[in-house]
Image 1: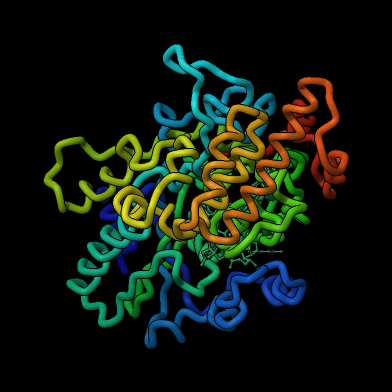
Image 2 (image 1 turned 180 degrees about the vertical axis):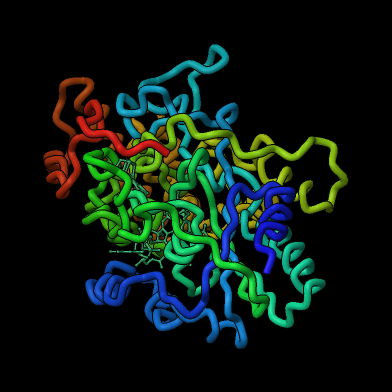
Length: 427
Ligand code: B12
Ligand code: SF4
Ligand code: SF4
């Protein structure tokens, strides 16, 4: 049945890739998921363990489904937050204003944190959901009795299904790379009983993560915590995306410095990837489209930032629940909650190297409303900043001597070095 028409509709809705996989053929080799879980790499994300058996069984999620329609929505907006031309010379973390007492509009600039690109606008679950529902309606008009949209909250192995449906291939960083758009995409699916023609995987894609990377290993070398322990295998417990978004309570001390200026999520392995350096911008629906149309919805995802790429972290520390809700509701930054975001903000301040930030840290520590995990992070931040200012003035800080920097985790320690030799195959 006509997959082309469905995918033309998807592109018309602003999606950048679309394909169809046969639901009966599990695309993830046996053992990949179970060994990852057995090694505890999912951290506290217990739902992944609970739902592991469903990753390859669309029919169990939507009885009667025989096809997985997989789609990708692009989110790269070079005019809002371009990949730095010389990304390896960044400190991997700092936005404008971080590091040194930088000036902004003639004043001392506030410390700012980085927000991962996918999270800078409206919550993509809502945006992509609107487009998928529109596609599902069309499928029902074609006779589908089952047309069940899913975005992210699905137990499906979304990347593996996307490979099977021909959307692209997996990089060594584990992310799906779509020709022309790189890995700056999020994924969604529709499970259906419509007998759509399957679309074949891209050449060499089925060979698994890194199959088209050539000798390149930039992402593995760039990762600040050495979280990519093997091609496509990410130990979530040390991934900054997990630590700043999914982890509840305190972030373990061994990773706090590596969190650097990341307030929410992390794009370092993707920024290191040559497939992303010249990625096309996400297709922009025409501004001025009727609000509520699905194209309008894709557009609403991107406008210059509900959050911006680099929010001032003090503004987050000083927020109460009501202000947090007003500012971040409907964006991915709502996920860690106010306490989670404040905890991250405290670490960003502690890592800023800006002694002037100490006053804010101490003032927030005195506030009775602040959560205990946040206070613990603030105390850590205060100690970091005191050490920094003592080092600057050539004195030893009061209290214990500064800890030695954490030993470089395997695969790390070259984050600021020039890229190594070895190029990926072209997309
Ligand atoms: C849990 C989760 C996380 C965890 C764990 C990540 C991980 N790598 O497992 C954390 C919180 C760390 C995380 C981080 C991020 N995530 Co996340 N995450 C998920 C979620 C909900 C489940 C992933 C999962 O099941 N992991 C378990 C492992 C075993 O599976 P996997 O990594 O997904 O897939 C691997 C296997 O299938 C294997 N594989 C597949 N085929 C084959 C074939 C062979 C031969 C072999 C050997 C292996 C193999 O390789 C795949 C990876 O390369 C998915 C949504 C979903 N339902 O899939 C989103 C998802 C993967 N995340 C997404 C995003 C955007 C991110 C971040 C980029 C966010 C950010 N900027 O901060 C980072 C990227 C970190 C990274 N390098 O992976 C997108 C990825 C889009 C893309 N282009 O690939 C997804 C698909 C959400 C979505 N709907 O768009 N995430
Ligand atoms: S570079 Fe960042 S997002 Fe990528 S694996 Fe490492 S910590 Fe996670
Ligand atoms: S091309 Fe290089 S940076 Fe990109 S995924 Fe492959 S190994 Fe990583």
